[in-house]
Amino acid sequence: MAKTYQVVIVGGGMVGATAACLLAEKGVSVALIDAGEPMADWPSDTYDLRVSALTLLSINLFKSLGIWSDIVQLGEQAVQKMFVWDHFGSGELDIDSADAGEAKMGSVVENRITVSAIWKKLETLDCCDLFTASELEGFNTDEEGVNIELSGGEIIRASLLVGADGSNSKIRRLSGIDDYGWEYQQKALVATVKPEKSHQNTAWQRFLPEGPLALLPLRDDLISIVWTSNTETTDANLQLSEGDFCNALADASEYQLGSFELIGERGAFPLKLQFSSEYCQDRMVLIGDAIHTIHPLAGQGANLGLKDAVTLADVVLNADQANRDIASQQVLRRYERQRKGDNLLMMGMMDGFKRLFGADEALVQLARSSGMGLINQSTFLKNQICKYAMGI
Image 1 (tube, rainbow, N blue to C red):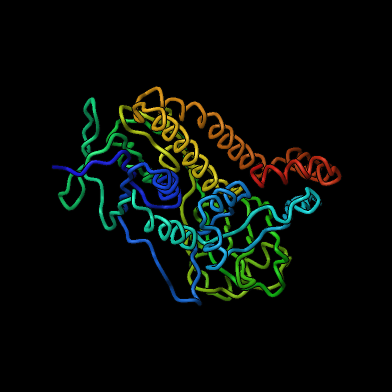
Image 2: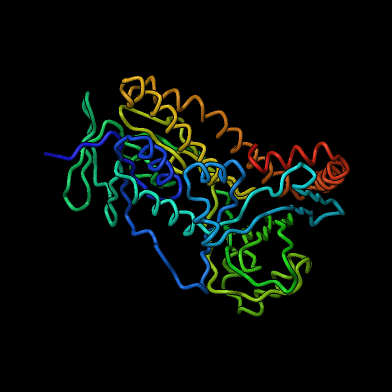
């Protein structure tokens, strides 16, 4: 007989693992399925190319789960300030969390560190079974539950199936849920570099003609870069020698942090906006990148997904405590209603910012640069932007 759980989550990344943790900690039986084997340790002199700028809201979530201290021990970097400037004119924006009454805006953390800390917590929870190096092959739904077939031939059963399996979600595809959006014809180049000058706990971002260059402060006084350009430009930058690449990076950042030394490899990924009109079907629900992928301009992708995880856990736990069917359409639609508006707003804002700062018309550039200058003169507006960046 197939082992039965209340919830089966496919995808053990940051969002899926967090959802599993939130549910299992409250006594809901959960199975977490991941195609890989999350890293438990790594050489101390290496750095993950994938990082997330976690808001205070996300940090407080991890504190509530009792894992933030582990993340801090493994390596997080506080972000206290943000400096944004435009390639056109003199427009710039200088924001300090202290002016908003907070010690920091958030933290930059390598994804492997966050995921490792969450999985370490999951291993202590009796209500959670972890399936690694295992993939979902298919599933079928009946009135009382979902039968889920795994790649090793094992079949497990759940009341609710959660798809946290990324932008190419197999669960979304097998469910026949359409996704909409468009390619940006851009790639984001990611790398870890050592700057000549201190990063000053500051997130630096310059808007260039082809896209933004973000210089995110990282542990050990390093910088994680996310450099968005047209696909051809990014591919060319990947082929540059280390010296030529570092020179190009210093030039693109106007030497705000001096020269750079490349640490490790470079990588790149194509950018797109993607969203699904449906969040749920019979006994199945999607969270995170499985329902929304946004431009990385403000680094909000992971934080959006974590909000999905929190909201889904809340509605499931409330239903469970009331002895209602946790996978009923009434419960799942409540999650969809609570998250769809926020997700669509963030996607629209990031797409709008991308187009605004990518426009090369002289009048648009002038208005953009002047607008940044005006905002920079307003303490109220800067504090509002700061609080938004904090997620509060």
